[in-house]
Image 1 (cartoon, rainbow, N blue to C red):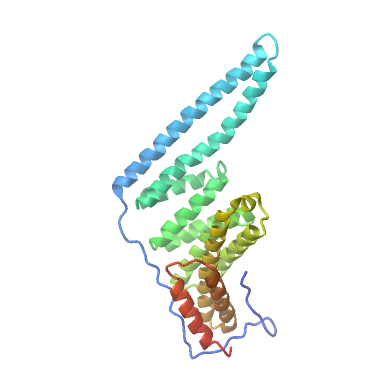
Image 2 (image 1 turned 60 degrees about the horizontal axis):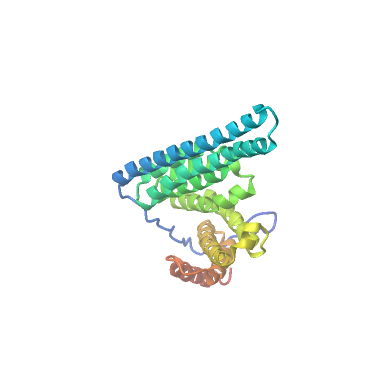
Length: 300
């Protein structure tokens, strides 16, 4: 995590560079209208998947209960049928939650790919209300909803949702890792609004979660990391790319607060991550501006 450097009495030392500021990044807002035809199709996909899930789980549950009841009331205890029925009922609960989330996820992904943001945001909001049923899926829904809102310039709405999710799940490390891109998106939203203190707070949360995920991946601390193989290498590159952008954004916020020492350190870290990250559209600008700023801050 990027920590504020403190000197003498806990106060941050800054150096005045003539009031110079780094221009806040300009988000390319998506102002295109929603794809109304795709909105309707997404709703049909959700309904279709939901009906399929209910029928499938209903059939499995009917078989499981029939086996359980038959094993108990058949004149003698048929342990095979009883055990099979009990396992089937447990499977209904597990697969029912999974299929319920997939009904949302399939429709949300279609909406996202077809630029049907009305249905995407509506389905994400609906899924968030059911977070106790599929907590992991709720994290994905929150992330996709916030990113959609930020991309359309709906910053206040995105911030409200992000703050609500942080209150609910902020103390859960696994949720935080899933939320890392949401945190950095909110940091960018606050930065564009000119609220630098809040931008730093949210971007720092994203940096913490991203660094923890990268550390676990590289040290293979989880079974997912151990099984990742080549995909793990690519995922590590993507995490470094996100960390590069997050450090750069925080460096810009600190610079504009005239906290030049902290900005200098973060620009260095942004360059370090850029050297390890794959190419991405903003990489050239991040590297160029970071080097320019480090040259200006050479004697800070």
